[in-house]
Amino acid sequence: GNGADSDADAAAAAASASAVAAAATRRLAAYPQAQYAQPRTLALRGWGDALAWLGRSGDATRVFEKGVRAGLWRTPLCRPTVELDWDKWLVSRDKPTFFYDQNRHVHAFSHVLRPLRAAAQAFREEFDREMALLRKSGGDAGEGGARLGWLVEGAGLHVGRSWSQLPLLVNGRREVAVCDRWPTTCAALEALPSVAGLADGQAKVSLMQ
Image 1 (tube, rainbow, N blue to C red):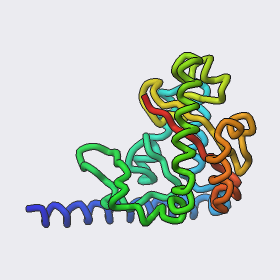
Image 2 (cartoon, rainbow, N blue to C red):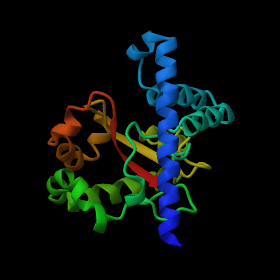
Image 3 (cartoon, rainbow, N blue to C red):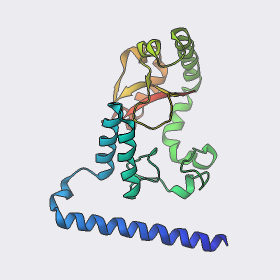
Image 4 (cartoon, helix red, strand yellow):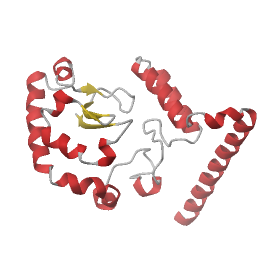
C-alpha cells in the first residue's frame, strides 16, 4: 500500500544519503585539502555553466548529471546550493520538477512579499510599458531585445529558446539603463537588505513564452 511505498522511499533515500556521506569521507581521507575546496554543488554548477556559455550544451548536461548521480540534486535542470524539502514542493513524483504554490508556501517569502506588495501596481505598469517596448523591438530577446538589456537564459535551465530575462540588479548593483525604465520596482528591491546587499546574485524579470 501507500504506507509501504513511503517506507521504502524513505529507506532508499536514507541509504542514498549514507552512501554519499561515506563517499565524501573516503575522498577527504584520500585528499585532506578537499575540506578547503568549494562545495561540490558550486564546482559542478560553475563547470557546467561555463560549458553551456561556450555552446557545449551536451557536455554541460553531462556535468549536471554528475551532480544527480552524486546525490547533490534531484534533476540536472534544477541545481540549488541548498535543496528544499522535496516532498513539500513536488507536484508529481512522475515528473522531476515542482511549481510554487503561493497558497501553501507564502510564509516562506513573506519577508519579501510584504514590502513588495506596495509596489505591485507600479510593477504592473512598468511591466506593461516594457512589453510594449519589447514588441516594438521584435518581440523577444533577439537583437532588438538585447538592446533593451534582455538576455536569453543561458545556464542550461530550460529547453528551447523560450526563457528571456531582464536583470534589474546584479550583485547588489542596479543596471542603470534598465532601472531608468523600472524606477519603482528597482527602488522597492533596493529597499530589501537581502537584495541590496547581495554579493553574488541577481534580481531580474523573467519572461517565458
